[in-house]
Length: 357
Image (cartoon, rainbow, N blue to C red; front, side):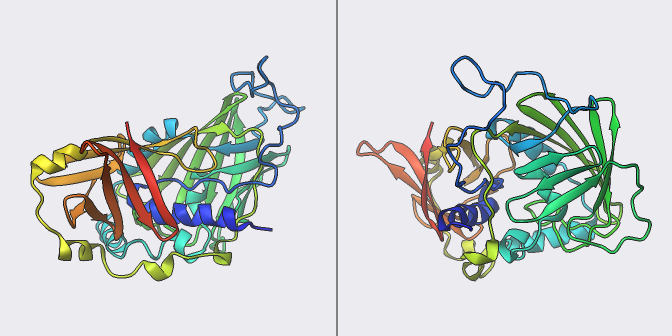
């Protein structure tokens, strides 16, 4: 069954995702320390991620495994998402959803992520006729490899319909038939039922999976959007089910508007704000060895915050050390010598410290 710890991690992700676009991470597993059997290892016993990719009996690359997106490879994905060019109506809806603090996001409503699911962690199970993608929130994708076409008049569903074929060592996946209830990204950009997704999936070696997803929806996007995503084999652990509604604690706190941050905003001398400029490292369970790096910059008299290399958002000052962003509080911490050492993100589930680098 789901553990309180696992749900707590996922609720934390839900809260922080609206601040900096952190992808959610897998919950703690019952077999957290159980070695994955049958995988190549280096002489010191660690998984050999550079070993050759396994192949199935028919010679195709075997894409099976538990996969996650390491922080080191997420920058390229974030930049691609920032290049999304939406139709005017879709851009206005995105602005409204951000102003509403993202409280209608799938992660808050405990609904399937739809086309966004492939950007998260998950397990692939491959057979000659079908490839399954399983996600810890109990959603799944079926990708049929038996030559069938996509349905001509599908009943729209949350996860859509998918078929695949091999182009050399690359699996090409075509998906359609999505309903229009999900978002394309954490900023709330919508799509319509006309959305089609093309994915090219390859495994260059044992420990890495490369995916390029192209979103095409002329009714919601001005042009197709190609998103590269790089996964890493998540060895010596396992996936545990996560049921969002079982321990959801965020939605009741997502009240008001993003503009409310400015009601109590005060002016702070840019010389003081300049002290906070730099990089900060946040380590999250269950992969503390893979920290998330945040960047604080100063533009004029405004502090800006975001992930390294990603888009930045303005912080509204409540005092010389306390700030708001999208309804959440950030407080900078100094040592006894007045040197800034960290900032603390204060969310429903507790305080999380990001150490200055």
